[in-house]
Length: 250
Length: 215
Image 1: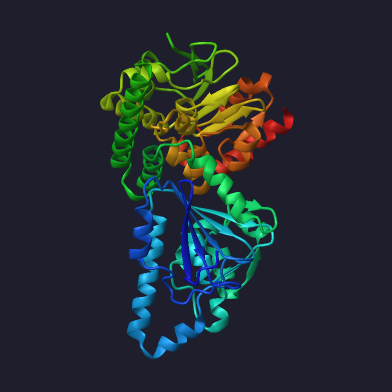
Image 2: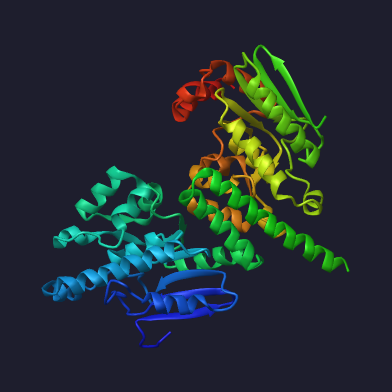
C-alpha cells in the first residue's frame, strides 16, 4: 500500500482491512483517526463479514500526535470536540455486530492502544509493546482506555499501567488479559487474517450478526429481554436453514 | 424416559438417558421442563449432579427435529428451564465425559460447577450448521472465558479438549474418567448446601483441588 491517505481501507474476500497508513510510527493526526461517516461508508460494502485494523509497516501505532493536541490547547472547545468524536468512533467500533480484530505488531501506544482496546479481539505479535504513556506527558488516556483497560485486567493493574506509563510486552499483556492471542514475530496481521477467515468465511452474514448481537445483548439488556431476543434470533436462523435445506432437496 | 432422576442420600442424580449420544430431543426438553418444576419443589435435596448415560454427556439437540419444529415459545420455555436450574439454591454439578456439544454444553454451563474427564470434547458447533447457540451459551462462555474467546470459538464453531476448556475457565477440574461420578458425589457432599452462600473460586480451591490430588 503506498497511497498517501492517512488511513486506507481494502477488502480481502469478505474481510475489510483498515490500515493506519503513516509509517513508520503511524501516528494519529487527530484523535478520531477516521471520521464516523467514512467508517460507515466502508461498512456498507456488500458482503462485509469482519474488520481487521492494522498498521502499515512494522508498527501498529505510536498513538496521537501530541503536537496536534497541544496546538489545540488554546482552543479547548476544538480539542473537546475532537476527543468527543474519537470516543464516539471507538464506541461505534466496539458496538459493531461484525467481529473486529486489532492486529498489533510492535509499537501500540496511547491512541493506538485506545483503538486496539475498542476491537473485540486483540492479536499481538510476540515482539509487540503496549503502553499508555500519556501520564509521562502530564496527560491521561482520553478515548475510553481508562474504562476499557480495567475490563481486561482489573482496576489495580490498570491503575499501575496507566499511572506508571508502563510499557508491557506481548507475553505479559496476554497474561494480564489485554491481548487475546499471540502471533509469531511481526506476524500479527497474518494470524488475525487466518483467524478471521476461520470465523467468517463459511458463515452467512446473518449468522455472524446474530451471534454478535446476542453477545452484545448479554451485557446491554436485562436478562429476560436478552433471553427473548436470543430466542428470536435463533428461531429466525432456524427458519432460514430449514428453508435452505428444503430448497436444496428440491 | 429420556431423563432419569434418582436420589441417593439427598443428592439428586439427573441422567441424560438416550444412549449412546444422549441426544436432546423435543421429548427430552419436555421431560426436563417438568423435572425442573419437580426438583424446585422437592424438599431436602442437598445437590444435583448431571451426567450422561454411557460414554458421553450428550451430543446436544437433534438438529433435524429442531429445524422441522421451530417454535419460539417452546424454545423460550426450554431456556427458562435452564435458568431455573441455575437459580436453584442447591449446588448443581455437571460430570462430563465424552462429547458435550451444543445445547448439552449450554446445559453444563448453567450448572454451578463442571467436572470433566480428560477425554471430554466440548464446544458450541451451531454456527457450522448456519445456526447459533440459542440457550444462553453465548453469554455464559463470554462471562467465563472472555468476549474474545467467546467470539472466536462460537463463530469458528470449533470443538476443544478438556485441557483447553480448563485453560479458558470453562470447566473447573479434570478428573480420572472411572472416578468422575464418585468424585462429583464426594465434591457435592463437601459443598455447603446453600449455593447463594458459595464463593465458586473458594469452593474449587477448598473442596475440588484436594479431591483431584487424591484421585
